[in-house]
Length: 289
DNA sequence: TATATCTCCTGCGGGC
DNA sequence: TGCCCGCAGGAGATAT
Image 1 (cartoon, rainbow, N blue to C red):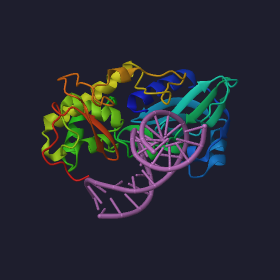
Image 2 (image 1 turned 180 degrees about the vertical axis):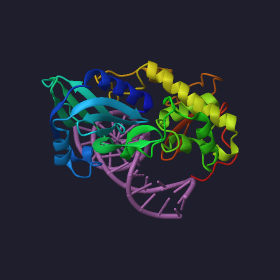
Image 3 (image 1 turned 90 degrees about the vertical axis):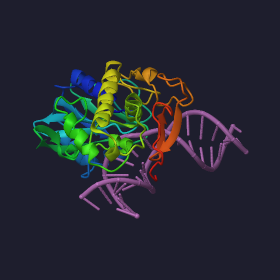
């Protein structure tokens, strides 16, 4: 599942393989893949055709290609299962191919997405807090790998909320790029249960969990991201290996690497949470969910 | 206004 | 073998 490290791997691949190329034509093969582009498929294809890809940028899990001469951005979200593949056009069409762009470099840029949670949309670039981002991404906070990420300010925002720490880690308007996998890993490293209330945690403990998120995502990035199946791959169709290094996520009933206690799985926000019952004791009375 | 919950979607695996 | 159901989960919409 693509979270920040996986998206960054894809961004780097796009930067290496398609920046500088121009778009000759675009085929939209599934309307849901462009549902966030309100003017529709014909408009998206028309606006992209003839544009030159001038750069590949990212904030959190949002990725965008800067286009010239229009200066708009093609915003890409991979959702649960999206892939941006750079392929020779003669390669067979993928089963879940949603969008195909033909480039003047002789390659295809393909958007493949089994579960159709992801998609493409065009957006003008606007300046937010000193950075140029698509206006549809303006509400997304800086991610922990951003050189201008302000840890102290983020700690303050988190402490100012009255909710559970895991909810805040998943709130992209507070800190971006963290999904269910890295939230569980960061909480495990910081030895904090995800149901702990933010306004009852000390500043140093919140700082510890944010720093842990930063560390775990940096490590994942060096290993090409996390992959459980063929759903997440880089632009060449290769999977990452970080899933072999996970301590909590997906480790139900396996021994905690720190204390040996069996990792437990709980339902949280309609999804699964994994934690060590000894290292990460739950608050005495969990808030109603 | 802040927080919580629902919904979208597809393929896989388990149970019957 | 085939059908049904639960599960996976990011993010916007809707409810509280």
